[in-house]
Amino acid sequence: MTPFKSPLFFAAGLFATALLGCSNSQNANSTEEKQTAKADTSGKHYLSQPLVTHIYTADPSAHVFNGRIYIYPSHDTATGTKEDDLGSHFDMRDYHILSMDSVGGPVTDHGVALDIKDIPWAGRQLWAPDAAFANGTYYLYFPVKDKQDVFRIGVATSSKPEGPFKPEAQPIQGSYSIDPCVFKDDNGSHYMYFGGIWGGQLQRWNNNRYDSTKGNRKPDEAAILPRVAKLGADMKSFAEPVKEVQILGKDGKPFYEKDNDKRYFEGPWMFKKDGKYYFTYSTGDTHNLVYATGTSPYGPFTYQGVILNPVEGWTTHHSIIEKDGKWWLFYHDTQLSGKTHLRNVKVTELKFNPDGTIQTITPVK
Ligand code: FUB
Image 1 (tube, helix red, strand yellow):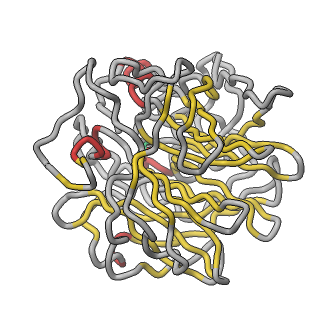
Image 2 (cartoon, rainbow, N blue to C red):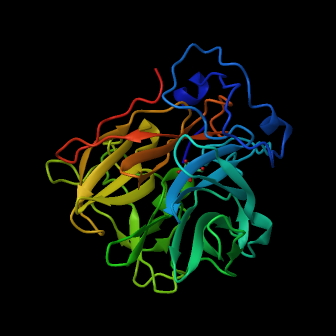
Image 3 (tube, protein in one colour):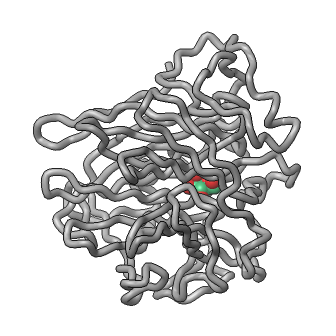
């Protein structure tokens, strides 16, 4: 996660849409949130428009449950927390889940699904969540700093996809850092991918041990890798020690930190198409959403290319689902606010070439 000094952040203008018929006006909880709908005077062409405008939302993890699309986003809020290079201004305190029958249809905001005050071990900063369904139960996975200010990943359960969710008393044992993505393979096994560098603290973890003094890697050092662990049948524990996910360049060699237009930063997602595993992620400080492919959920994955060119705002984060024979990319930008920590989720179609490669999308012109 993100320093606030980036050129993209400062360049972001103020633009918004006045007419976004699909949003629900409930639950806006700050003056700033209520003032989001402004006329778009930027002259820019956005590929798509925010899914809701009454609250700020980011990091959309989309799933199809019972034939309906559910989106599990972060709920960005203007709490007034001072900006810093570790992303303290991303000071989110609850989750709202959104849903819609199909892309382009009305979007429902189901209200607060989980509040930080109800998570016994949480300190601050509820970041990008994900969800899964198994055992007749919906599971919400969420990163939050514990009371020692170390990011851990928690789990909460509900009988409904939209919640409300009840959190477990402790984080998942052995979990750390941010951005959980839970993938269900064809054989029913679930895997959690996670990790984010800089504000997400992944650089402090080596061999699953925490060292608060470890800083970011130097340009000629090996790039930090995302992590994976198979989930236990209870969906609340890891069934194995956390492993690194190898990402290789097309030359078969691992990336260095200086390969920052391709190396992993944060925001993992996994999907499977035509028997191939697609591991997708954000390159962070170069603002690309990229993908790598492999033949096992553990990797190694070979870098293939860019899915989404940089959006407005410093962060970029996504998910990919198939619904009714089409593939959809959920992402965010800062169209409504022009502020890097007050984002809005969007969706656009994702297209594949016959050989399985992905057509690069440009989100704003
Ligand atoms: O929303 C907070 C953080 O910003 C997420 O965890 C990252 O992926 C980035 O989008």
